[in-house]
Length: 264
Image (cartoon, rainbow, N blue to C red; front, top):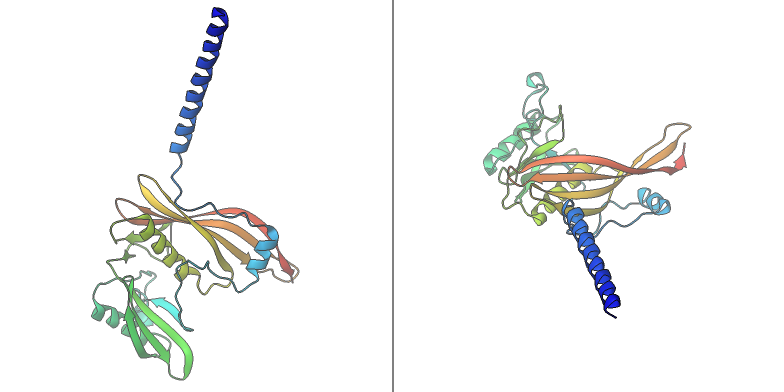
């Protein structure tokens, strides 16, 4: 009996040691991954992707979106405020926290445009000042001239003629998961609202000690030329904000491709 009890005790000890070791491995492996604050993305079938890409779908229901009422968005910049003969190959969007300065930039951009549009209304949010202008001879030609608010985002270090992975500086504090989510969705919206080949499917937040990110799953289509089929691509666009500096960076990754349902 004593021998049996001793062997049983040894077995139990070995089981406990293995469980502790496995538990330690789980802790080590999970600590390398930033915690998720939203559920993982759904698994889309090829048939679902084909249906979405050729539909009128654009953004998820809870995604940042604006009703532009037929207008297009234009952020005033170093090119737009100058006459053609004074322009240089540097395109930097302005920011200000002064309404009058924002209006002056919108007016100079308007004057130096191909034709003058009348100011019909203005508004502001925490993100921008906006001046809605309409071309009198063609009322459907509507432009929303905007100036970023420096208290929200500063893009003075970003030259659109020489882009890299930096999108500017998020100046709002504190830098939280919710704040970065809204910022990233806002940037995604203004970059793709008028792009018929881009569909935003799903997003998930991630964070670690140095940054907060939003990973957006995006569907895009490349329309085929004569004798070719459309090519569909599923991928991610990740917007990250540095916790200390507020610097915003972007990265992209392709997940997989699908042959389109239309050939030409």
